[in-house]
Image 1 (cartoon, rainbow, N blue to C red):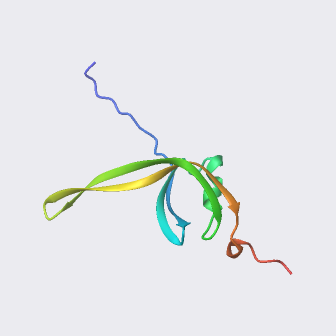
Image 2: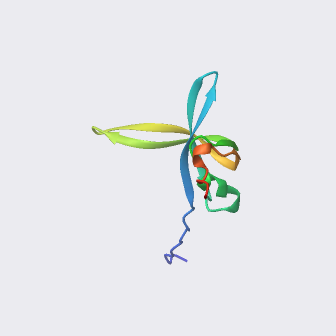
Image 3: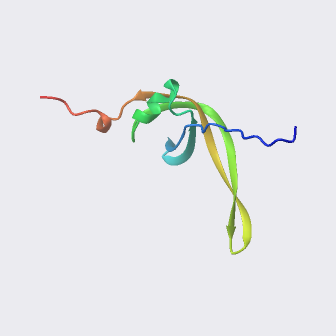
Length: 101
């Protein structure tokens, strides 16, 4: 039973993007993490662009990692929204294809 064995864990497809929200004239940027970005439920993420009106549901999570600088280790924490669903509600005019004459 002391025989070594290998385990291969398949990588997960993911996408990281930024989302701007505006409240009372103040813009706030959010980091979005989309796991299984190739899944059918997340296809709208790939086709969305700047200015599109979108609806995102999910939950916030904190991702932390160590950074070593000048022989001192500090931890960086990133607050991110783990996306569960993503819908495009309205396409920005600049993202529409040009009209064919």
